[in-house]
Image 1 (cartoon, rainbow, N blue to C red):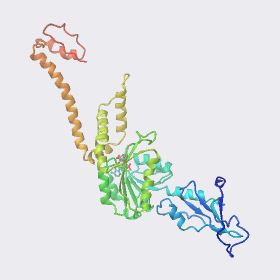
Image 2 (image 1 turned 60 degrees about the horizontal axis):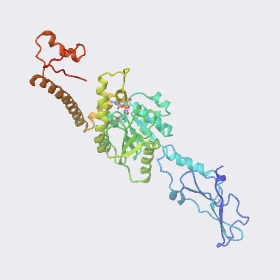
Image 3 (image 1 turned 45 degrees about the vertical axis):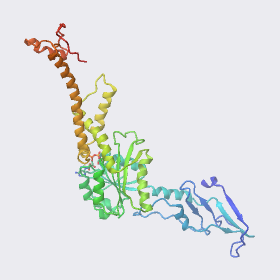
Image 4 (image 1 turned 120 degrees about the vertical axis):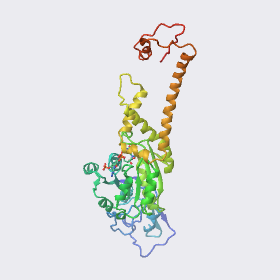
Length: 420
Ligand code: NAP
């Protein structure tokens, strides 16, 4: 019982005279005014016992309740009765800290926990939408889902309600609408949502892998009363197979209304990722895209290029080669739409692709320049072997490179090209 842990401290105040209207039997436990400092909820949350016992329960939120932040100490105290009781023979007994005969603490804790839970509607319930939903569900949030395809079975397995019709989804009045469609389809999908059926200060969050595009899209498409947070969890089902701990989560509070409830709702949403141990990186969308072209688009491009080589494990794989094989797996398990979106909707990607191409050219050039230098030496500095004068000589050099011909015995005019 929790009150066994709470010290009972009563302070006797002789300065007050007895009130004739007060019961002179001395305080009954129920009549004693108690002040309890709640320890497990917010340390500032104070609950009071009314002087007359009557049944009062914290109201349970109606189905369409508005998201409310955790009760602040001031708000909690404001409408609670003063705690004081008179004592026969003069003086007032004040209960500074005492047990409750009723489990208010756990009720308060339950209420607080309830307010930490969000009703989240995931729009785009494909690979990544379902991946996120697993963690949201584990944390106890209420999940709704909608997608182009029928994912009702997958949703049911996660305890989520699935809505084929976006009108039904929006009529459930989610606290948060999370856009997890492909980058390419985001605009079209957003247009299918009946925004007028949502509560007028719904929070919209996107998880698209580019950020400036959805920021502009959401700001221009949503009513001004809607809050907007643009995010990019920089991991996926493959790379975060073992958890999200230490993985970067980029976010930009693009528009969060200046009220405690709206700020709290945004915090509760971001806290989902913080609780999982993500490295929280608050960053403007434009900065994200500049960095992401250099990191994410480059990584995906190299992975996609390597995939076209159809690389296979060999008995003598080095660590470096194993890393390349893993890179192919990590990048090519994502849809091509995702990769295409990284290119189409990040203005920095074209430049990165051009730089990558010229980087390949410059590496190749360095190799071929070296090769030409050796050949020129052979041709113009008299160190070269005489030009082939018969059919057998014409074919000897390529055979040498392939290791299929034994080299001719060196002569004073013949310098062999050694390739390692
Ligand atoms: P994706 O191919 O980028 O997107 C698949 C989702 O988009 C599915 O829900 C699909 O719906 C929907 N979709 C595609 N074309 C559509 C269309 N024409 N109309 C309506 N819906 C359409 O793959 P994803 O991995 O699931 O990624 C989803 C989002 O998360 C993307 O924006 C991506 O950038 C972002 N993201 C992904 C990762 C990752 O590791 N995968 C990491 C961070 C962020 P249906 O399945 O119902 O057809």
